[in-house]
Length: 342
Ligand code: SF4
Image (tube, rainbow, N blue to C red; front, top):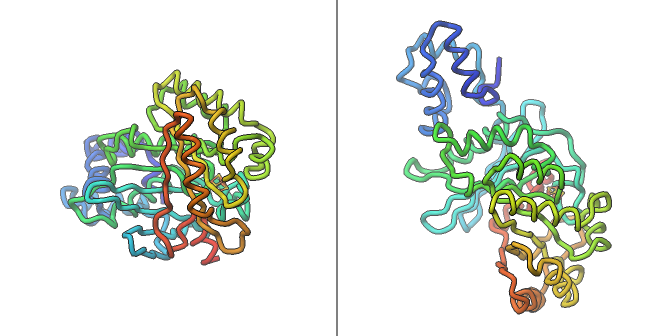
């Protein structure tokens, strides 16, 4: 059977046309999945029973299944999804106030980037997710919400390096942002990357309106190459140039993510270096105090070190926000839940 969500709407229309059925049926099926959150063809009651049967014979809506679903006291929900080949991935629903419903999705099984403080990269990368699997993450998460609530932000910040799987991610985001899909504005979709200049330039040249978040984590190549090993081949300068180019082409100001690791990258001289690196650039900075991961030796910085770091950046005139990880006690850091179930 074909995974339904790996079909584009055009391909699905073609499927109907080849059977001398109206092409608009494809939009109806899509509407049932994304708008009405149906989970099986039998729920699609404006299609005839015979047609529902034919669809069910040829297409599989779900190739993934929920294997674990922990919920944190703050309302954050995490899903561990089992894939058809036995691999597992994670995705998260975050609630902020009455309005904001943000989901964080994965793009690969594991990750090849090897950031030393991250559970997702500990075992390397197994494979890219398909477009359908990425969309299934969104649908599973949407189904956690009551009917009157909608996902309104997507952050592509879960397991994997999104820019290493752009060919499958972009079609999924195109559906997520289209009116026939989830209808989430591209400007409310954030793609996070450790920095692959060529892929950032591709996003810029294709003039996507997605928000770009670059995970920097260090103000110089020596330290960054220790924390994010792929930096050895790339270097901060090339990443910043590509991010500047993204701004020039799209008008969208990049965010720089800086996970603050106690005693390692949270010192005043590092804050000063970061300030001079980003001075004059279009940049928002997110400082994220580290969430400890079992088995890894990194620590949350003391709150005075976070405050000092932030103050130095603010005094340099940079726009900065401190973000705290949500979902405490549900293995909130990316990759932790998957490891605890391995
Ligand atoms: S932090 Fe992101 S890029 Fe780095 S290893 Fe983890 S999942 Fe990969």
